[in-house]
Amino acid sequence: MRTDSRLSRMLHALIHMDRLGGKATSEQLAQMLATNPVVVRRTMAGLRRDGLVASEPGHGGGWALARPLDAITLKDIYAALDEPELFAIGQSQDHPECLVEQAVNGALAETLSQARDLIAARFAAVTLGDLSRDFDDRFAAGRGA
Amino acid sequence: MRTDSRLSRMLHALIHMDRLGGKATSEQLAQMLATNPVVVRRTMAGLRRDGLVASEPGHGGGWALARPLDAITLKDIYAALDEPELFAIGQSQDHPECLVEQAVNGALAETLSQARDLIAARFAAVTLGDLSRDFDDRFAAGRGA
DNA sequence: TCCATATGAAACTATCGAAGTTACGAATAT
DNA sequence: ATATTCGTAACTTCGATAGTTTCATATGGA
Image 1 (spheres, rainbow over the protein chains, first blue to last red):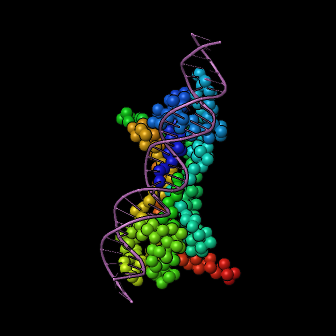
Image 2: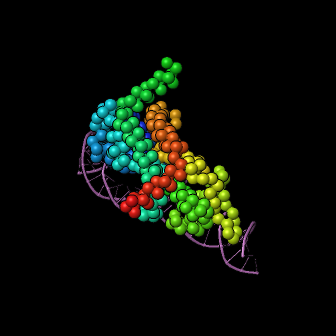
Image 3: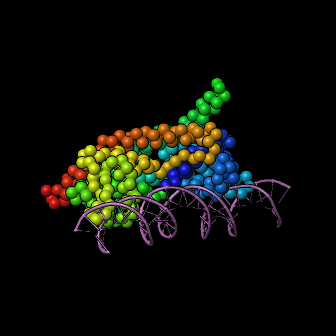
């Protein structure tokens, strides 16, 4: 399975936007993410819908952060992407009436549910501001500070 | 992404095998899993390699459990499948040298690592015997016991 | 007004791994 | 001998993200 990189990419994009003064075009972001402007627009659409960013067409337009990074959690971004599936392993749905299958699926579902809760709690607790400060630390470390 | 159902299917298959006296052919298992005998053989190959089951060709052959269900953990099965990727969300690998990307990937990796540890601990703690007894409970409940 | 710059969106292709299928060889028991 | 069963290679199908092409629309400046 090919893993979904949209969450990672949007985090990356928004932090870069912040460092560009809170604004950027799809073209600029596409270069930062090594992808296509259309992919950027498509992926950002949910963030706009949820009020995390705003967009304006035409000359001088582009994308703008609608909130400070400290007011955006990973959970906000994840929700704006319509909560993509977290897990690559799943239940077999072959014979829903088979009690063995139900027992197996129940056990897996409970385990994955616990993992989901853990991830959700982390996503809710971490802001883009936190990640941006992580960057600052890495930058300082990279300069040997 | 289409979720990988091999773990679920193998648990399902081995419990059914146990209830058939510990033996079954690929054809029988394929019917239980609503799939093809070749898919069963392919998926069971890792389990044979790891000594969880044995296979014999020819007339009267088929698959046999090599251990009691209580001596097989979900972790054993997961390992026999060569530890398939657990998560459907991933890091972007576009610009590994970008410090923003490193900060983002680091945060995601840490969260997923915690979730992975949680899942691994559950997998190590649960045996197929446990799931089989879950089945017994469901069966009793289904009969109104 | 004219035009370059942007986003919006539809429609299509590319990609990648699990899953499914076909086909044939090899081994085993009756 | 023959039917049964696994082993394996090779190919197709499927589904979702990702990538691409194309055109419409809106904005601001010359």
